[in-house]
Amino acid sequence: MAEAGAYSVRIEGMNRQHHISLREEFDEHDKDGTKYIVILDDGYPVATCRFYELDKDTVVIGRVVVLPEYRGQQLGCMLIYWRMGPSARSVLWRSIRKTPEYCK
Image (cartoon, rainbow, N blue to C red; front, side):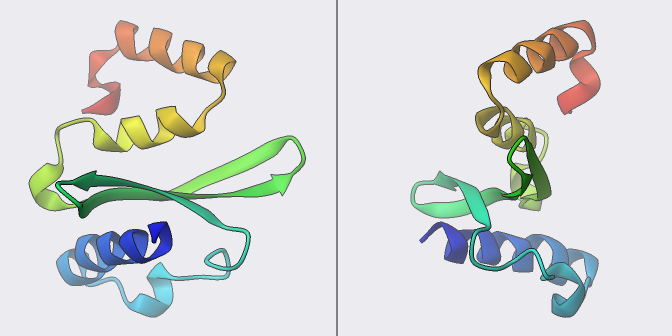
């Protein structure tokens, strides 16, 4: 389910709006083992990001996409925040509080 929602947001947000080809948008990291976070608004996917393990200590977060009508609400920041561990969240929170424009 998350994968379908993520693909829907990415097609709408990147392919249709920015004319990025599907071949460019979907790459070798969209495979088994890749995980997705999707934010829903009344059951409709409106924001997504993907992540995959690079090694046992490193996770790569990418393809953060928010539909145009939902931008400016810090949804992309929320996606990254949810994926981070507690210590990384603390660092991100301090950064956001010092520079509010970080997530805008």
